[in-house]
Length: 576
Ligand code: SER
Image (tube, rainbow, N blue to C red; front, side, top):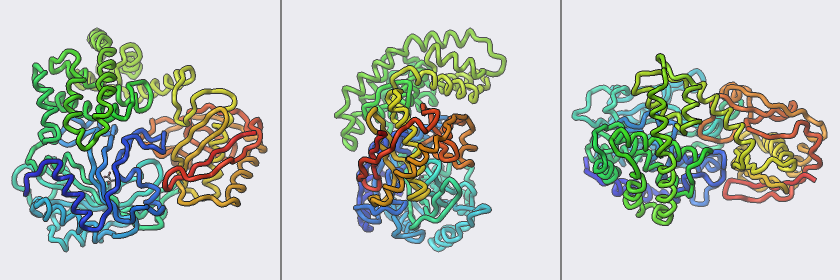
C-alpha cells in the first residue's frame, strides 16, 4: 500500500478516470445555485440530477470531479473516527454509459493498482434486496470474479442510496471497505469499526416519484469516494483527524488548549472547517437557513473550546490556518478571507457572554432525568443555545432530552418570527404584500400544472417572487412548446376560476410523502411539516402565506419560458 498525501489522492483519482475516458467537471458551490430550498450540496451527484434523469450533459456521459459537501445529519456522530459534517467527495459518473461491470472494475483497479491497497484488506457490501427490488446478484458475481472472497462480501438491506430529496434518482449500491487496524479478519463484519467504508458505487436505475419507483430512462452509475477516509487509510491513521487534512488545524487547537479532550478537539476541528467553507460563500451567522447552520457550528465549537480551557477569540485564528491549508484548491477562501474572519469573530463576541450565562443557568436548573423540550427551548430563546449544545450538556450529565418537543417549539417560533421579520422564505418570498401572496399561490398552481402536463418527475429547482412577477425554475430537459405553455396557462386559470379553497394543515413529513404532497428537493425536513392544500388540485409542503380562495387572483399569464442553466427551465409569469 502506498503512503499518499491527500492532494496526491485527489490528483491520482482525477487522472485515473481521465485516462479512462472521463471528462473532469467543475466542482460546484457548496450552496446549490438553482435551488434555494436545498441548503447545501450533500453529494457530488447533487448538481447532476437533471443529467441522471436524462438531460444531455455537455461534457458527455463519463464524468469525474471532486466536490465539497456538507451533511448536517451526521452532526451527532462527529467525534468518532470517521464522521464529518464537511468533507470532500471524489466521484465518477456514467450517464447511461457504463454499468455495473465497468464501474466495479474501475473502482477495483483504482484501489488495488493505483493506490496499491491489497485486495486482502478489502471487503464489500451489496444490496440484499427487499420485497420490491431483488438482490444485486450481478455486483456480487463481479466482485467474486475479481477475487474477493465470499466471506468478505455481505448482503445488506440498507445498501440503497437516494434519492437525495424525497423524490429522484436512486438505486442499489455496493460499498467498499478497507481494514485499518492490523491484519484483516477473514470474515467481513460490517459492525466492526475497523472496516472503514471509503467508496460507494450507486447503480441508479430507478426514479422515486411520489407514487413509487419507476425505471429511469437510462442506467446511471454514481460513485462517491471520501477523501478524508481515503487519506486515513493511506496514511495509516486511526482517525480522519490524524491525516494531513487536519494536521495544522489540530496542531493549532492543541497549542491553544489547556486540557485534553479528544472529542471536543475533533468537534472543533470539524465544525470550524465546515464554518470556514460556509463563510467563504458569503453567508453570515443568522437564525435562518444557511446562516443558522453556520451559527450552530460556531457556537458549538465555542462551547467545546471551553471544555479545553480555551476562553475567547480563538475562532479567527483557527480559521486562518484553515484558509492557508485549503486556499490552493479553493481560492474562494483567500478571496473572502476578510469576510470569513470578521464575521466569525463578530459571532464569537456576540455569543461569549450568553454562553457563560446560559451555562450558569443550566447548572441551576433542576432536571430529574430529563431535559424537557420546553427547557431546551428556553435555553435556546434566552441564551441562544442551539439544540446541539443542550444535547451535549444532556449527554455529559447523563440526562435524556426531549428533542421532539424542542423541534416543535422551534418550528412554531420560526413561524411567528417569520411573519414579522424581513427574511428569506423557502419560497423566495421577501414580503407579504397582497401581490406577492397571490403570486405565491399561483406558483403552487403552476408547479402542479407543470407536473400534470410534463410529467411527475418535474422538480422545483428554485422560486423567486417580487410584487410584479413570479419566477419558477424546474428540472426539464428541453424548451416547452407553445402548445404546452398554453395548456399549462389554461389549466392554472381554470383552477383560479374554480375558486379553490386554500387551507393549511400540519402533518408528519412521512405521512405527507405517502399522501403524494409536493415537496422540494431538500436535505432534510422537520418531522412535522406545514402543508398547503388548494381544493382537490394541489398539495404542497410550504410555510405560506397564501390567499384564502383562488378566485381573487385574477388572470394568470406566462410571459417567458427560457433556459436557466442546463437541464433547468425558467418560467416568468404575472397575474393581471
Ligand atoms: N451519492 C452517493 C453517496 O453519497 C455516491 O456518490 O454516497
